[in-house]
Image (cartoon, rainbow, N blue to C red):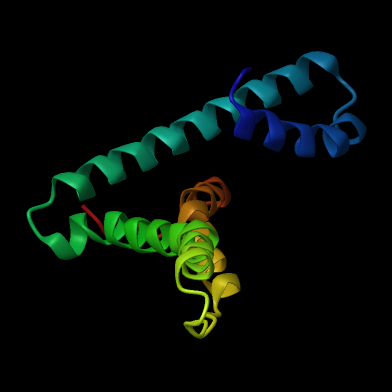
Length: 136
């Protein structure tokens, strides 16, 4: 189909589907319906994201950008800035003691990946029919 997430989900489903549904036409129909459900769920999430982004309150519209910028800046500092600063310190101020090492990159990466994965979990909830629709 060309959309990596849908292709991955379909590959997961196709293994058991081959054993459960022997009829080729029925299998194709089921695969098509699954693709359409995935696309509709993605469009629904896009509409939710659009509505959140247009909200006048910074607490609704600004939480994703805030978390994204904080995580992005922290990762940039942890993986680039601290090393460059350490190199400059050694090159120009060799007698200066090293600053304390910062920890927590595992937690930072977990938060960032969790935030980026929320859309996927929401899609799974909608496909299973267990999502709650409160934002109307």
